Image (cartoon, rainbow, N blue to C red):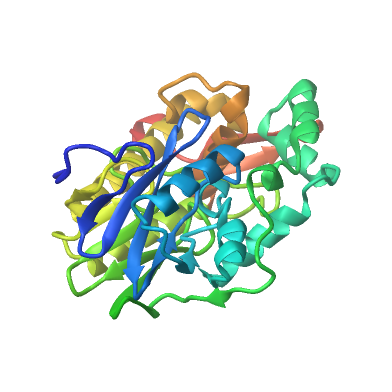
Length: 345
């Protein structure tokens, strides 16, 4: 893998990374402290890809970008790779301001609208059962109930209509066509965009250079297998995207060497699965396997994502016939490897 640019753009600046394409960066108040957003020249204006969190600080950063590197020109369309708040947080604000259409895949748009509808609602008891089954204690479940419905706090109201994009579609931006390449696992129907004319790929969270995207099971679909979807998507992308493509990710720096990176992501998950399988020589709850999957301690701030990712790996082993799940009288799930420890090594 190679990184062709010296460093990221400073706040309020844009770096041209390909013809008619600017890389910009917005700050985020969390451990992952930034998101990359991109602008592609589209006639007399710009098509924007991803929007940052729906926070006043992000709007202020956009005001500087719109007046500065974007030259005060209009926004012609807003394209969101997927529905996570750092990607769609200001989509509604930008679309309304410029009377611009929102382009997303159907599952991403519908899921976002569903989560926005949860804002201010009480937590469902099914969610409490889900986290109790994973091994959460009553204090942690009470925190889940208190924090439920937070999605809308970082997402401005979405447009009530959108333009659907599908895998294989070609979106016209500035006289060039960008092919939609869909991935699954990190989110339901994540859209990458590939300008085949010069092999530039807007990779979103599907292909990150230094970290692996979260792949989680959530209470809305407790038996899902997002890790299987994720691994299948990565294998598929290896057959589609050229090795020399310039990958423009949502976090980290642009890079080349997509096949190398995809291989590393796939290999990393399979190593984690083997390590997890070895740990299940005796029954474990989902919260007991954090040490097999994560290098750092799991605190309250990331407990939900860590639990979701642990269950994603456990569900994958269950689907593969490599683990079993038994629920006890207290509603807690216990997972056990189906193979002997030495066979799983």
